[in-house]
Length: 387
Ligand SMILES: Cc1ncc(COP(=O)(O)O)c(C=O)c1O
Image 1 (tube, rainbow, N blue to C red):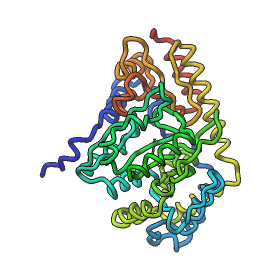
Image 2 (spheres, helix red, strand yellow; image 1 turned 90 degrees about the vertical axis):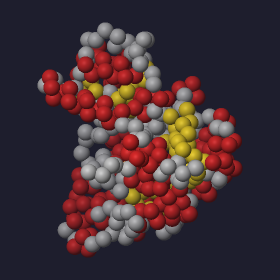
Image 3 (cartoon, protein in one colour; image 1 turned 60 degrees about the horizontal axis):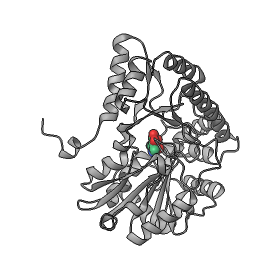
């Protein structure tokens, strides 16, 4: 067997090895942990979206290769959604691209820009794809700390001028995974000025833009003055419409950047199954009020979880958006130790914060991608443990 490419040996996999170890442990002793680790919603895709797919799949025209950029209807529905939600007016032909969920598109954007010698600015902590793919492309990853004291927003003034000069891409993600923090319009305006000054592409991961409940609807980076000159934003149907298995989303932003992503994707995949794009159009043109219903489900679950954790004596950073919350490690414990104790003593699966980068040390992340009964059970188990 030939040796694997060196790029694979640099991959940080402690997050995934923790999840695997957990699964093994559950199998060994038969006591399944309550799964509050992975952000994979337990609820089904709404029936009207499934029905749109069912009808589309019967039409043989959907069985052919889809257009590389996505169907016209999908790009128009995406543009319409951005218009209604954020007041944006992207051109569906040049400024919008259908994607297979957002993960592949974020990886492929990196491939379109990052080369050896370049810097990619990656928040710390962060969803691992941004840094992993920068390393795959041979670029240098510079971690930009997100600190609780700064609302988990990067301090742009602390980025050295030499680093900014070499940077090609700057990743941001709000509402944020794993911290659940929100960006302000002022921060986005400052970020756009920074990007234009240093000639950097802003890659904004908006996977959680519709999962908010105790705040005003979160803004889009693309609303900031100058953002359409330097930015691209990734939207996903996975979280907003419970469609993670369908693999459908879209990117929107500066036409040059969207074009670069499209160029890589054209040589890599042949698009999302057209019938799925039909279903995505039904989701984006929602007339059922489903996103609001989903938000109220998450709101109730999150309040239940946070109240329970606080009653158990733990310090929770109460979120206003996403289906995640960070819990501070009890005194004398690091995030690996806290997650281990939650798993072994309380049989609750949480993700240690350092799995998202060193900046996540000091916290574990819990999700509410589980029904109220499992959440109540997790609280009972956590309350029974001495912290
Ligand atoms: C921050 C963030 N971005 C993007 C994704 C990818 O989502 P998808 O590829 O399903 O759109 C996830 C998935 O959990 C995520 O947490």
